[in-house]
Length: 152
Image (cartoon, rainbow, N blue to C red):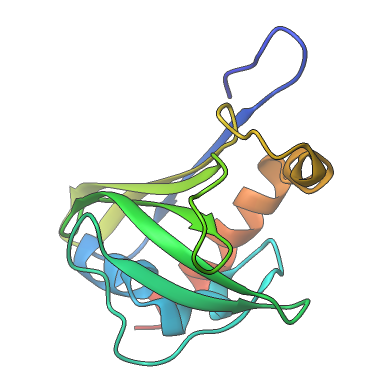
């Protein structure tokens, strides 16, 4: 975890998962599957058919409070990296980012790193929620993702 002088604004958690990178990446890159592994317990549902395939794509997700978020994909390498910045519909992202990196250890094991970065977040009303998104929530997402991926 890296920290700002005042408070952590970028938190990271990693875990080795007993599954191949391709299988794990499918669970992350398909928004319809994301509520199954969301350790932040913030995601409600996403329509089928939004599988992320490139930077610039926007996928839509309903969150648990009933709001909708448009997630702008800002980094993508098939099977290896994906990152997005959520925003309210029709708005520019306010500066926080979710990212995933996958490093194959061997064909059946993958090191997965999950990062939440709010160093560029400008919307102060979102700071409370951002501060609450610590390593424990990222580790919960990794644990749920591992359980799904390892089931095969």
